[in-house]
Amino acid sequence: MSALELVNIRKRYGTVETLKGIELSLASGEFLVLLGSSGCGKSTLLNIIAGLAEASEGDVRIGDRSVTGVHPKNRDIAMVFQSYALYPNMSVARNIGFGLEMRNVPAAERTEAVEKTARILQIENLLGRKPSELSGGQRQRVAIGRALVRDPQIFLFDEPLSNLDAKLRMEMRTELKRLHQMLGTTIVYVTHDQIEAMTLATRIAVMRDGQIEQLATPDEIYNRPATRYVASFVGSPPMNMLDATVGNGVAHIDGSLSGILLPHDVQERAGKARNVIIGIRPESLSLVSGDGKGLTIDAKVEVVELTGPELVVTSTIGSQRLTASLPPRSTVTVGTPQRFSIDASALHVFDQATEKRM
Amino acid sequence: MERRSLSAAILVHVAALLLLVVILAPVVWLFIMSISSTPDLIAKPLHWWPDTIDLSRYGVLLSSAVNSAGQAFVASLFNSLKVAGMATVAALVVAIPSAWAVSRTPSVGWSLYAVIATYMLPPVALAVPLYMALSWIGLLNNVFGLALVYLTILAPFTTWLLKSGFDSIPREIESAATMDGARLDQTLRLITLPLAAPVMATAALFAFLLAWDEFFYALLFTSDQQAKTLTVAIADLAGGRVSDYGLIATAGVLAALPPLLIGLFMQRALISGLTSGGVKG
Image (cartoon, rainbow over all chains, first blue to last red; front, side):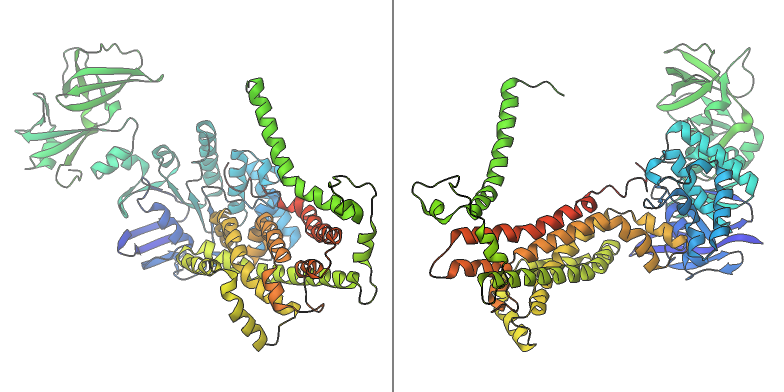
């Protein structure tokens, strides 16, 4: 049984179409992340699932029941908002218990549920406080608690960590992962942060211009991106995208004399295509050792940055840029030519015209 | 504190003092006039501080003897309280739902501008139509009639004020309440209105003051003690053959007291900041 099913969801504002036919099916217990830059329609989609907005076309099914036109409170869902949206005039305990209060759950039962939720989130000592007396991370926990206490079929998260500072964000991320593993709930989570998506999701839907560009596991999204957009969106530093022209099994990098001898399987997949984009993740580049067998590429080193765990080397091939993440103790000299070897299994080839993976 | 030269410090303090004097001087003079004896008030040159303090006028105005100045004054005081009170309550009753609706539905925001546009008309332009309307429904020289007229002045203004108040309450909080299963009335009663309390208090106070101080319509639409308000009653004190300036000043002081008391009483509610902590920051 699918916990959530979206059938051809479209949303129009006047003549502008912000969602262009979203199809999606989510199994119970999955953690789906809607990933995309701002304006791609991910928050609109979440609001449509929540019932805060209505789709212009299409159907939302929760637990095999169509909820189109059903009021949010009757959809058996809970949502955590970006701004937390706590009720400032109520204590933490009442904030968490508000959903139960509105559903006329008896006070004793309610108190018990609130305390249990508070224990899970380790905020028992905060129950008497007002939201204004809490730190950002604590408010976030309360907001999650408010969703958790109702034990809904689906949890919706709208960029819940974007207001936290970097350290707290990492802590809460782990916390969310722990909660998901512990409770086995179904979650739809909106973010523009690819690290959050990669670490939390069981599946990621990368969205662009109101469409799902690719729906796959984090591993697949990272290692087998379906389009150039997905490839460049996920990963830091981002994937190198080199325009190249294929001839005789060699991809000649545009604007330079160097070329890459394509492995046989890639050659076959490339077929007759002439203009391609060669995608290489920075971490699949390494310094050539010994005689330099296998795939190699020559570039001129421009900038070397030590981030701590890695050495980010930016170099140029003709007019194009190539970034490599190397071990921190690598010896690279600025201004000199450098030969990098490429992990052949990590070579991505996209069609320049369609931007699709080949 | 940042470093500041002595002359700058003096300048700032002098400016502040000047402002204080400009604001307080009329009030202080009003009070001195109200407790001066008549000879002191008409002496030449003027006695800035009275030789003899005379509190009798307060007694005159607050007396309840039949047909006295006091009876008329006290009656008008109660009329003013009734009119301003009713108009304020009615204005809030009208303004709260409409302000919320306009704040949450930007597409109907134009209607508020249309209402505000009527606000631009000078009162005198509406005097005749309003007079005829009141006469037609038989509410001339009636506190309810006057309250109704004041409602037309107060409602646009309070709606405007409350709309900006509701605007500052994040919609996400209401969305959260909706998801939590609250009905619209529950969301408003338990979440939105408590958060809007400071701005509602502000709106109520200003509406009350506006109605309390209104003179033009009150003068036109009331004719005797049944409905005459304070502002008209004070004008009456000056309208006779002999004007007792001291008495007018005393009436002014007494007329200023109720709004002052209400202001003090609502001070606590006026302090905003209740919404802090609900959303980030």
